[in-house]
Image (cartoon, rainbow, N blue to C red; front, side, top):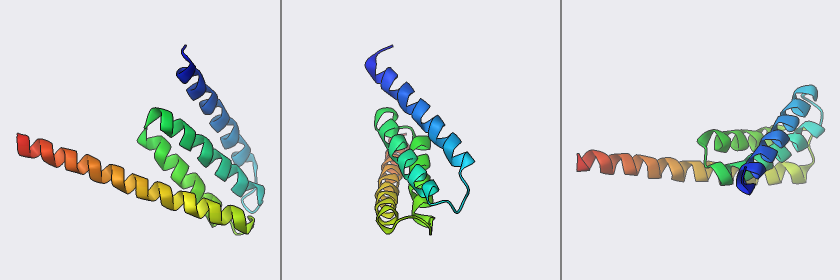
Length: 109
């Protein structure tokens, strides 16, 4: 196993631990927003290595849930909102690029 595969496995393990902690944390607990934020950050690091759209969607969702938590600290909510917006823009650009490439293929055919 090379170092990049090792890092991806470590990120998978971290994400699994965070998902378990989220599952065990009550909805109105402020710690849930922090766990979502850390999960989003973990999935962002994983996405940078894998470029998988499922990772991109999971990290956007995690930041969105962190922002939606009314019991979280304002600075955490603001940071999560900024990250969610950044990821949404990235998703839109990636989708636009994919649609453009598809259109180019149709024109070439």
